[in-house]
Amino acid sequence: MSGEEDKQNITLNPFEIAKRQIDIVAKMTNLNPDLIEIIKHPKRILEVSIPVRMDDGKLRVFTGYRVQHNDARGPFKGGIRYHFQVDLDEVKALATWMSIKTAVVDIPYGGGKGGIICNPKEMSQPELERMTRRFTWEISGIIGPFRDIPAPDVNTNPQTMAWIMDTYSMSTGRATPGVVTGKPIALGGSLGRNEATSRGVVICAREAAKITGVKLKDATVAITGYGNVGYNAAWLIEELGAKVVACSDSKGGIYDPNGLDARKVRKHKSKTGSVKGYAGAKDIAGKDIIGLDVDFLFPCALENEITSENVDQVKARIISEGANGPTTPEADEVIFKKGIFLVPDILANAGGVTVSYFEWLQNIRREYWTEEAVNEKLEYRMVKAFHEVHDIAKKETVHMRTAAYVLAVGRIATVMELRGLYP
Image (tube, rainbow, N blue to C red):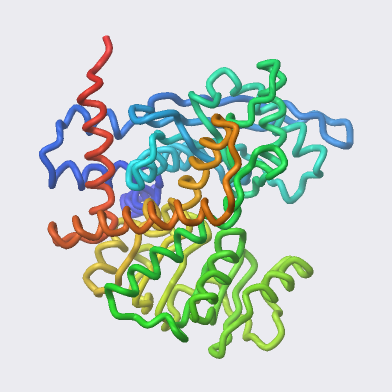
């Protein structure tokens, strides 16, 4: 491997990016360097083999991970994703970002993350259930309502959480809904959870618009990724008067300068498997979404969407990140210099974990809240966190991601300092 290729791999390695972002904070604060070093490393990493009997009778062994990053402020919290590109460094990075994210919005959790290397689109429902239940059994010794609380992520959903909850409950001998969040409503899931991540993305975009002077009425929006987060962000921003002019999924993108209809695009994708071919819109390459001249860009796909390779193409005035880690540190600096207002993932998409916290509270208290109550509480926490981060950004003359890290790492370090090191 050439030196340039090696440098590029480090640049795009999500865990290296996460550590570099923490290092940036360390250089501009007086935080104890020993605590910084601890925060840069996960507390626990579990890799498991998951034997599954497939529908054809053959046995396959999948690899799964659960990474627990830091629990100084509370139980580990984070999703489980099913994807053929899952790897340990990705899961470590996502667990780290969850610790940061929960601290930014000031909820009493630490960060965790899980994943299984598989292609769920090629698996039947019974195969997915057997894999999920076996994985749950393998990690059951380190999860629990007050230890580590999984949630849905890429290619997992409320049904997946129902299987995890049931399997874990069998091991405890009683129904334990608080072991996961993002469950079906009938099993103790929270109203408002399904669109919570997207609602946070849109709330942050709205607050950024107030600061930058962008008018929401007829503002143009481009969205990469049209899964749960991208779709819900689309119709939510439409309700504020903006128009979504482009969106994409893994198979391609569509563009209509006159505006798309979020719900109709969703129905088209459900029928055809892709947003491509939507009537009245022009098919474009998914990678071209990044470079469209729009008011808002919502990156809602996977990591490393905006890098040093394509950041010069970005023309949006405001970016609100729905995905985890969609922008590399090099791209962050270019965006900042271009005067683009970027709301980082650790703030913008924290609506999901915030409502997960609300769900957990309802479970352990055996309460049920109205959707209006959930959304009102989410609105308060997201707006408060946004302005706390923005105040730091203005004071220190840094971009919002660095400001969010300063806030979050400071909160984590303070608790660690108070608790001390045992033994």
